[in-house]
Amino acid sequence: MIKRKLKALYLRLLFLLPHDNIYAFHNLSSHPALELTGRKLDTQAFYDFVRRHGPYVSLTDILASGNLSSKAAITFDDGLEDVYSIAYPFLTGQGIPFTAFILTDKLDQPGYLTTAQVVEMAQNPLVTIGSHGTDHTRLSAASPEKQRHELHASREKLQALLGRPCTLFAYPFGAYNQTTLALMKESGYRLACAVKGRPLLRGNHDDPYTIPRLSIDDTTLDLYDY
Ligand SMILES: [Zn+2]
Image (cartoon, rainbow, N blue to C red; front, side, top):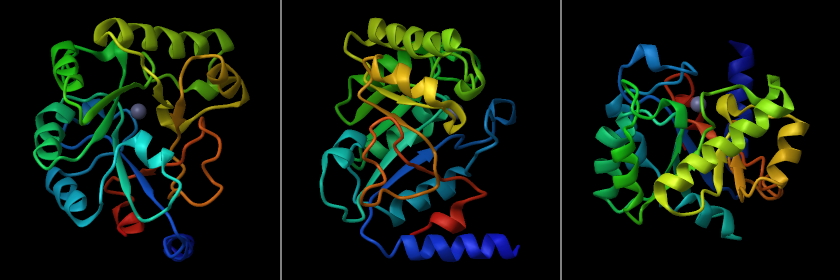
C-alpha cells in the first residue's frame, strides 16, 4: 500500500516534466481466455481515457518529434478481435492514428483478429501494423534460435500479407534481454516497444529498441491518468 502510494507520487513528479506518452492497450472487452498478460480495460473506460488525453499522433511521429509536449500515441498488443470491433471504428472516426501489434500464429483464431480484418485496417492511413511475434513467447527466457524465429517469422508473414515492410515490434510481456537487442539490430525492425511504465522523457528513449510505454489497464489506470 505504502509502496503503491510512493510509486504514484514518483509518477506524478515524472508527469510534471516535459513528456509524451505511448499507451499500450490489450484486452478492451471480456475474453478471459485471451488475457495473455492479464491486462484488460473495460470498453467504456477505454473510450473515456482516450477522450481525456491526446492530442494523438502516430507511434513513428511521436518518436521522430524532438519536442516533448504531452502528445500521445496509441498502441495495442496481442492482436485481439476488439482492436477491429471496438478500437478501429472509435479511433479512426475521430482521425486518431494507432498501431496494432499482431501475433501471427493467432490470426484467425477465436477472439483474435482475422487476416481479412488486418488487411482491411492496414489500408487505412491511420493504422500501422507491427509484429508482436508469432505466439507470445517471452523472449528473455527463449533460446537465441527461438528469439530469431519470433522476430523473423512474424515479420515475414506480415510483410507477405500486407505487401509492405514491417518495421515495428512490441516485446511480449515487454520482456527482452541482451540477445534480443543484438538480434533486433540485424533484424530490419526500425524500433521495438517495451512496457516500462514511464512516459517518454528527455534521454529515456534514445535506444530505438527499448521504447518505453505505459500499459493502460484496470490495474494502472489511476497511476497514469494524466
Ligand atoms: Zn502481449
